[in-house]
Image (cartoon, rainbow, N blue to C red; front, side):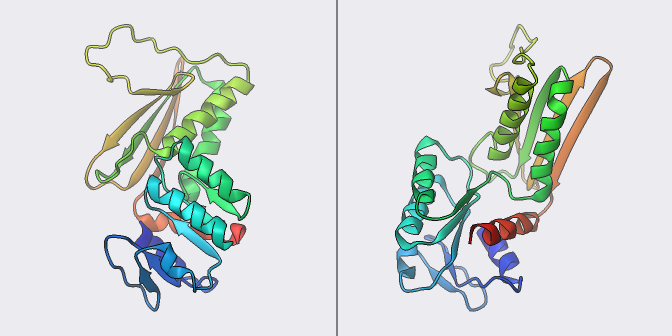
Length: 230
C-alpha cells in the first residue's frame, strides 16, 4: 500500500515524496530517501507523514510527529483504544487525519448507507479483502456499521434483532458490530478491497457496493487529506 501511495502522490505536482520508511524491506522511488525509522529523518524538512503500516507503528508515528511538529495522515486499520489515545494526544500538537478508507467511493457509500438506514427493516454488511489483510472485520465495515446504527438511532429506530434462533456452526451469522448491524468478512487472493451493504424490507431490497480494484483508488483521498492537514 505504501509504495502505491508514494508513487501516486509523487506523480502529483503539488507534492514531493522525500522519504520512504520501511523497517523490513528497502524501497526506491525517484530521489526519495529510504530509511528504516522516522528517527533517521530528524534532519529532513517534512510537512506531513502518511502512515499505512501497522497499529504498533502508528503509535511511534504519532509520538514522533507530535515531537517534531509534523502533521500525520493515518490509513492503518485494526486500531484499538490505545492507538487512538496516542493519535488524540498527537492531535493536541499537530494536525491529524485518520480514516478507515481513503477511496472517495467508499466514503460516499458510507454516507449513502446512513441516508438509507432509517427506511429499511434490516441491514447486513459483507466486506471482502485480499488474503494478506490481517484484521477482520475491516475498518471500513466497522465505520459503516456505526454510521448505519447512528442514523437508525437518530431516527428513533430500535436496534436490530437477528431472527436466527439456532446456529449450526458458531459464527455463521457474522459479527454483531453495533446495535445488531452484522458484518461478514471474506479473505481471498485476487481481491483488493470491496464492501456490500445490503438493506431489506418487505418486498424490496437495496444494495450499496463499492469496489477498489487497485490501490491507486486510495491516492485521491490521501491527497485531499494531506492538503487539508498540512
